[in-house]
Image (cartoon, rainbow, N blue to C red; front, side, top):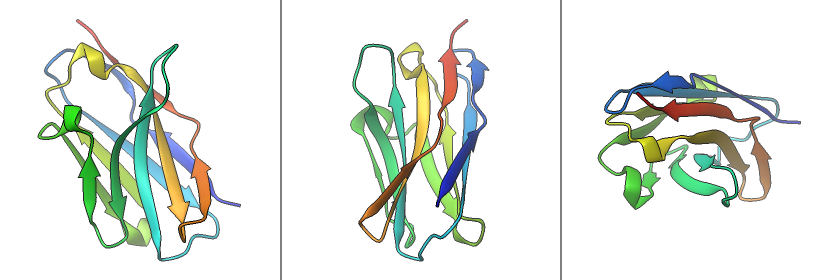
Length: 116
């Protein structure tokens, strides 16, 4: 069984920065993709960014140039550095891992609130 534990959420002012972390534990192969998603009440979960074990990254358009995803393969940890935060970035952020293209797991989510 794989577990994902997110941390780093909180309250930040518009224009501020925040770093999210997600540590994966359990049986994980060396071929996986880790991603961040976010969700606000009443809306579908939205993909934000992804990174492969080879450090190939992708971002949704609304966060390009403001968010950076990175990972430490030795620690099975993925990070999301968020800057120039806007009120519309407010959401619960979820960590996701897809292992060997088959097995998918989710974290419990961490709240990010951007407000003055």
